[in-house]
Length: 158
Image (cartoon, rainbow, N blue to C red; front, side, top):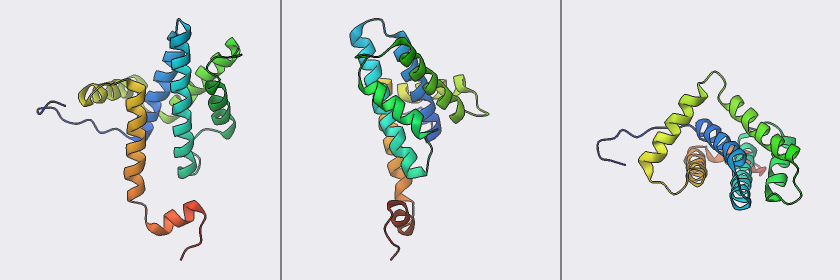
């Protein structure tokens, strides 16, 4: 980040939205086996992270079925996957992104995310987005009172 730049503050929803759209774009744009497998691997890691966030937040993931489908089919890295399955993966990503961007301007959000990425470092947009999701989730968890942590993990208050 340059010393004269103002940091762009992103929410977890904006980061997830951008990651979902980037993953969908990556799957659609893949023109060879290596790119296709890399796009599916990125999608798989994204959905694992989103499922973990959703479990801690009480269901931020749209549905268990969509989450499980995306994780399972992406983990196969294209082996035995049909075109219909790939279209469904992309549609789920875009549907979830649209839900996260409700009443928002998705292209503007994606532009803000790309600007934040360019200001920060590089190293690949999806890995950076996953790191940002993890960082935001970790920071958020630092401010949850201990009683809420116990309630979230199922242990008795005490």
